[in-house]
Image (tube, rainbow, N blue to C red; front, side, top):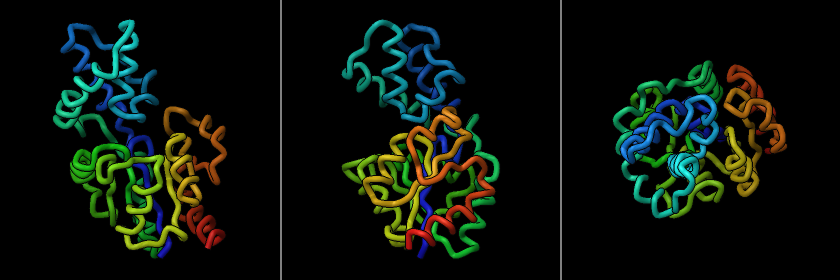
Length: 223
């Protein structure tokens, strides 16, 4: 079965506002003001909680990995309480996934968000049933760009890695696809925009309504 695996943050949904809000709450707990900008730091948000904590602490003139490790559990707890406050699926995402499934594709998610939080978010957004698998950062001992989580997401969705592709938005997704030996389409509606072209993906995805035809083309070519 042809299979399309999606990254979550910055690909299926714009989660940046809720992620940055949680990180800023951690910084306020340290006695500072908000250290991250919801717009200017959106790309860092899509690289995860630790990346945001590092960036904010660096703006205070330092911050060790021990500091990041200490704040990270606080960040996760705060984020969970407001996980869907501002988060929205990107326009056309639901229709595109439904179209893929209607055309006989399997669909799944491979994210570097902790699995439990990803499950909570997709359930609250009302779309968890559209994906046959969900593999998170802690499902396996390794995470993207190691190809093992991607392969597991394909297998759990009922597909074959040889007839699969990844939809993502960052260099991590590009490296994951390369390691797994599959094509990747990078979305251009994230904070980096057309800048993702520098990563030389097999395709760029400007709009979700173009995905079903693109997936058919790439996977028929790679079959």
